[in-house]
Image 1: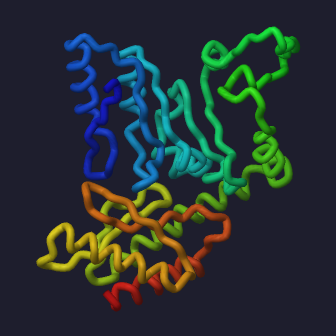
Image 2 (image 1 turned 45 degrees about the vertical axis):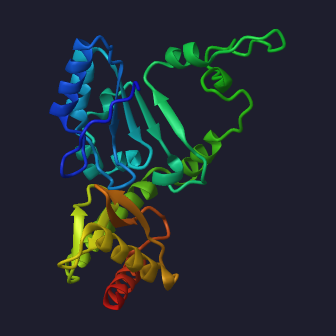
Length: 277
């Protein structure tokens, strides 16, 4: 009951005017808005909200500004990503998943918070059997900063590859993924009947096959069959989503093993599947 879903525009980004109107209405109704959540790369389409505008509203309204950058945040290592995510530096907290954008082992997630004391106030526990651990000023006791009391040292998975390789190989990989996604979008445009739902902003491109005279249900069934045909060859694996009740197919380029030859194979399989359905 306390969550407000805000309408999105044609690029699936939060409509800034709609957000401001809803906050104003809630305040008139006696509610107190306390947090805005923006996206730096959504799962469905890779959409990046206007983070500058969201941060401005958050500052004006004195509310917490959180950015979900789990999928897209590490594209900040690229020039294109920095331009697209301008304003993220003003967030109070940011979710990042190194197991996505840094190609690291699954389960390596992180939450960045501007003020460490905020996490301490939320998560510090006291018990007679727990010795005080936070004595040294440079020691970070993570059980005081998260819901987990017993936890593995997941930060090692991030530190070690950066220590071994530096940041540049990761930056080059991310640049390549952006280029491959743009290439895929251009190739999809050449296939008769294929419609790109939204132009890629990061490394996700969503598309579907359209045929004249089909209603929404029939069109969705057609694209379900198309997806099955694409994946049937087992050379690539694409996943679906629903956008405005439309069944669409996603290409998400975010593996260090994905290079041009894999994308070429993907487009071959898509073309063959389109010819079959």
